[in-house]
Image (cartoon, rainbow, N blue to C red; front, side):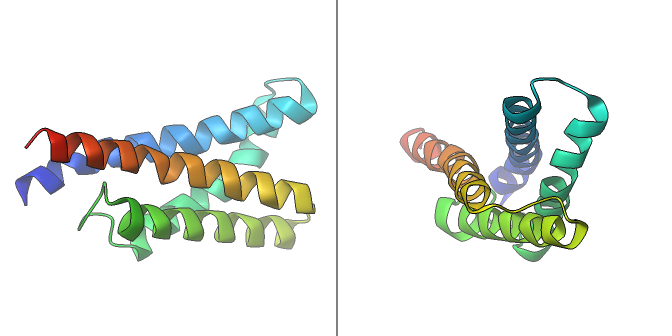
Length: 123
């Protein structure tokens, strides 16, 4: 149980960094600038989704579980962000949905696959 709790700050930090990097890269790819207002408008729906995902998926129970936690965090983060973007008129073109879902899948689940493998091999 102590090991799980010690993974919580790491899991939260990694999730936040990955979602913020996704927003920065996505914003820069389309606007070719690092305008803070533009970056925030891209990031906040995904950060809101991530916060909701952490609350709803009981991350504290298994923070590095790829399927249990990673799958839930990914799905809730992306779905929430897309709903927010629809409601705010921010745009949800088909290509954006595919890219957002795929990249967040690779990162939010991917890092947990690596972490789970490393923690199992370290035992």
